[in-house]
Amino acid sequence: MVESNDPKVWFQMAKAEFDYACSDLEEPKQDFFAPTCFHFQQSAEKCLKAYILAQKKRFRKIHNLIELLQICAQSDSSFINFRDDAAILNPFYTDTRYPAHWPIGFTREDAEKAKEAAGKIIKFVKERVGF
Image (cartoon, rainbow, N blue to C red; front, side, top):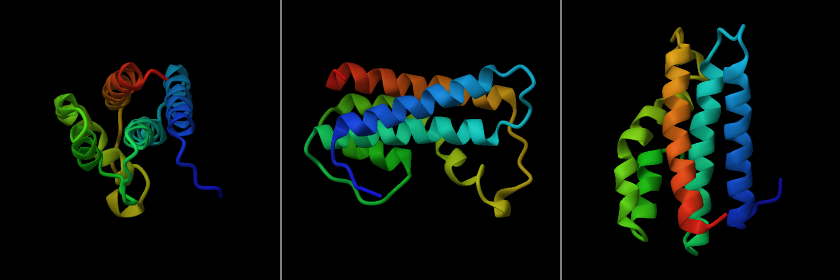
């Protein structure tokens, strides 16, 4: 795997992850939402990392969106306004992937909330960086 410090690549990956989760959510017979919620979390995470890289900053290997927001807020304090959205998305990184956290029944409503939260973060970063 090649590491990329190109913020555009990170943003493209974030958008692709978001679009994938949206298409999964639109599937009428869908009744297993853990992967969908995970992809929305990942889209927000990659988007925040894109912003950090665009600011010529670095981040350690983390998945905590609130911590990433704090790094972003060093350049633009408006990022703190997305703390509630990050709090919605944060649990989906671990709780959707590891058996120790199962059985957790994620619903369509959970996925819709994750979509809304991730969508707000992506839109904000896009406006700030101009991708």
